[in-house]
Image (tube, rainbow, N blue to C red; front, side, top):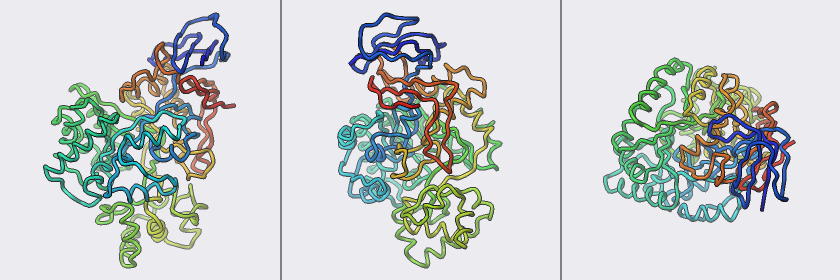
Length: 507
């Protein structure tokens, strides 16, 4: 199959200035990139009429692990130009699967109605191939899932023998094609890992020359300490490739730490670390509602938490703890998802507003939502600063990540954070407002993530590379998704091709 795109303003993805030209693709591979007009043989010829042609965007931080099986058309991603997604982030992969973690994973992803029938990465990839997703999927190995596969979700310090078993599980994932290791040190059971466990795992990452990506143990009060922990563990393991997931400074009391953070990152790079990061271009995060809970409830996985809250005394204790939070806190937490349908009318609203409509205290409402199903309860948290966001994404080592699942345009598989449909355009437009040249902005969505995750043949418009291409109108390229209507499509994307096949056609 031949595809010819002529009269395009070509951004090659490597940071070079754009030029007018023609791209010829055969059987999903770019065969020729030529400046100016070019006489080409008959085939599928598309006239770009001067619009911008870029490499397909690479989502450096995705959570489409199961949603891509339930909705392989990946409308939210491809409609914003994404042709490749990095999954298995924040310590949460869907492999390996054993008797210790199968029930939890199945419950966590219950809303997608996908049976987790595999046991390892090879089995998952076979199921993925059967579903034929619109986007290419690049897997990471998730530490939380690895640990749970070995010894469940309880608070447990690994013995030396268990650490060796964990290293073997990680090595098996690498042998089956995982691009790196991810950790989610905020979540159960990753939060129980000590320094020796982390550095021990990172020796395996270093041996395979893969990347280590981490959702830091803290992104707020202990942000700097958490970055130092990550760098120290990598240094002890002899690992240079470190990637910080959704890099941020959370909580108004911590916003001033941005200067110290930037100094710390620069020092690490000067010391020889190949230190990179990703970021979604929004100031509201999205995670499990259960992260609001203090100990001992914060040490429970969501499945156990739901079972625990069936007990009236535990429910009352959680309710009491939540009522101790400042009243203004409930104005900054927005309900995004809940188990069942009775709370759907409140999606996108603050918990304060939802509770007022029900004549309840927000703490009571939150506890009831968690009791109905903590695994399906998600919320957006206001805690970031726009100025800090801009300073971070201006760093030339920061790629764009949605931190979201691929979902259909309707709401049949739940609601996204607006980042699930609008991240790439918003990321580009913020950087444009900051004065970065467009060719450098495109590099952040293409060749930079390809370099971070070592994706050969991706991220460039260059002969021999995959024909993953995006045609867009720079003047119209903008996000329209909001919390009220989070599945609104990005404007300005005209065509998206993956391996030379047209997978999206916009207005």
